[in-house]
Length: 313
Image (cartoon, rainbow, N blue to C red; front, side, top):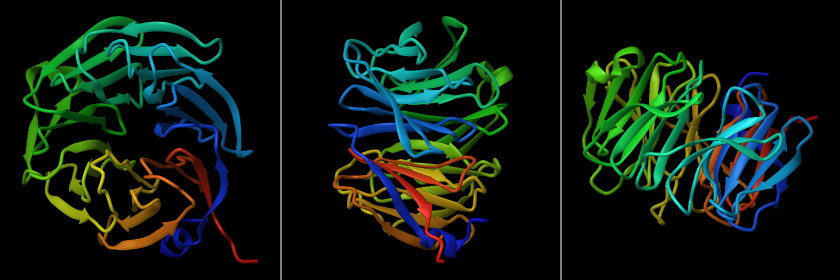
């Protein structure tokens, strides 16, 4: 089964989970698509089995809170940010619910966290106007960049370069092997006056960069030339929250949540809206991701919803 406009319009909520008492602030699929992990403002981490459609287990992080949860390259360990005590990034073993390492350095809330697709490096960006490069094996920061504004960052699918979005107006591309020499290219975009960039992702094929904001606009640019390709609109964001937008695994579609509880989908080729999918989300849908291996979409407000294409008999 291949993703196309018709298949996307047939997506329906197959299962709703009500494991959380407060909003789910981030989700992440493991690379093989078999499990999904979520972090919530209720200070819990929930692991879901995507094949059986069941919650596997719940861990609590009452002491530090939990935000921006990310799988590493093993299904038993994750990184997450904190919502209280301090702005340390924590490396957690899910197997025994113990911390392996702490990554200290940021002095304000961490707003972007991404794992390298190929090795143990990861990037973090904070409201302290810095981006830091780390390695899971060392608590010491491997690299530090001072910026002029709020950062967003992302690795390309090959893990050789990363993009940093600065001040909601420019995208800088860095080579990981020599990033201390500065960016090898900079794309200047029209500044979004009414909103901040809150998320950045490379498409799975590496050709596109998606920039999500805390307003009713999502931008798509060419990853090689920085030229603006499409601006996706139509969803609502009247609360100024960082709604996540994500690619389908074939890079042909973009999905986003909305404060009206619906899911919107656009074509990356034409820029046109493909579908508006209705769910029973009672609150703003902050998290939206497509499973990397299976024909399944996950969306979250306080509830977690798993979507599958409804096939006519």
